[in-house]
Image 1 (cartoon, rainbow, N blue to C red):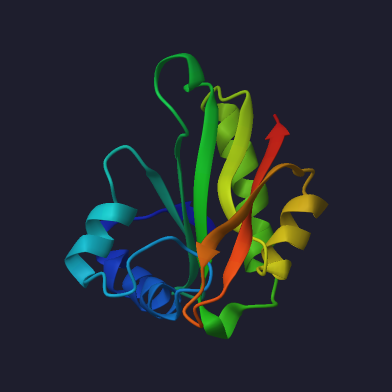
Image 2 (cartoon, rainbow, N blue to C red):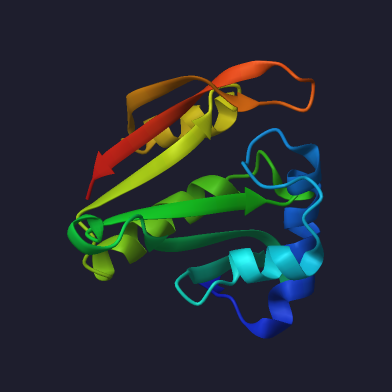
Length: 159
């Protein structure tokens, strides 16, 4: 089940976000970001935040927001994270499909991911299977914790 997040979900959301942030492999977030900073970022008032749950356990979370203001406000952007125990079980796909439906219902005309790390093969495969195309490549734009630089991709799909 995917539903809007409520304040009581924060501990479960933080339990999902923290290891992803600390790993530093897929998001351009400060690896030392503390819980208060993460909460302000993820639960930003401009974000529609959802959780995926099963039997009362939060398995994943995503947010949806306008990618830009003004003339670009008809394109949305999302961030997704799945708990380690739920990876490979279709949670990310379900959240991706839900986000596409939610974006359409909100009146967005397209969805864009601004910075998909090129080594994140699972995410790239999922987004391509949901109709996203790679429309740009930013050479060496992401520095991994191992200190190597990899490309970041811009992915897009019309709704």
